[in-house]
Image (cartoon, rainbow, N blue to C red; front, side, top):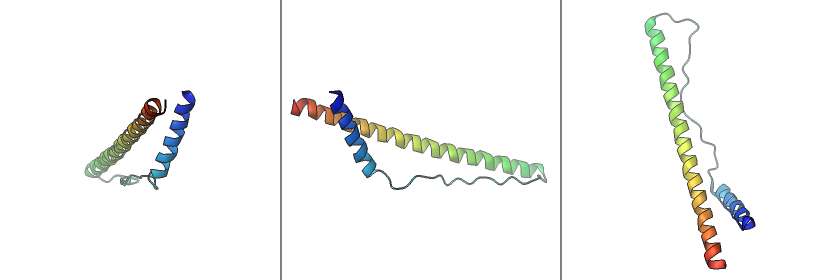
Length: 92
């Protein structure tokens, strides 16, 4: 049984890799530019607002990627379970 599981896992991984995206996702967040010296409190506040927006953008990108990872893992596990059910019910 362990050999079947390993074989199933390898087949699944190769199959998923062949169907996976052909590019690596990248965020489109804009990093704020920090001046050498701020000329006013308003300029400082604008910069801090830009820093907050940049952080939110990065965090949103990370959450989206983590959700995609979760969905891929779930799909992988479902495929493994389906194969294992087929092997145990149909081939034995």
